[in-house]
Image (tube, rainbow, N blue to C red):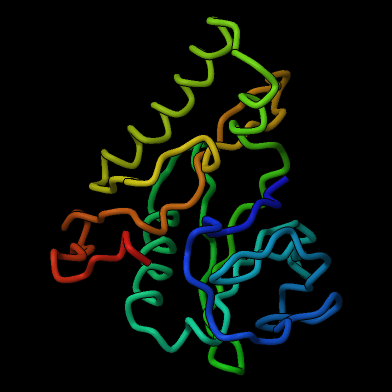
Length: 200
């Protein structure tokens, strides 16, 4: 499932902060927190259910220590814009974005129940046909992103999920457009060289 940490272990950590949300809490009057999927240096990923649509989502919340930093918030907002703009079944879509009462930013994503490509690779070399099938899914998702001026810039096995869908055990979902470059396509302004967000 989408339970990996949302940041790399080498990233800096924010000042110690208590857990922001608990199981049963409701965010924005519609997302009920059901479980913690993962924790990282910058935030926490929860599984949440939309109370009206009865559909699971992944809800990513920046820790309060990061929500006051413009560069980090800009990265988070860019992930929301990028993942919400790409129309591809091979990209985990963003569906909502907002601010909690304590000022922490949150991003609502498609819930992806599967395992990372890293996990599959750790089991041993992939058969050529399987590797080609997975590669085609990755290329399809990135192609849809490139078509609207979005470049991922952090593609790695940890950011590729393999899920079971329609008889396909290795259906690809590309995650984490948080360090994407967004060109001026469709009215979206580019980040520009003055914002080195890949370092966040």
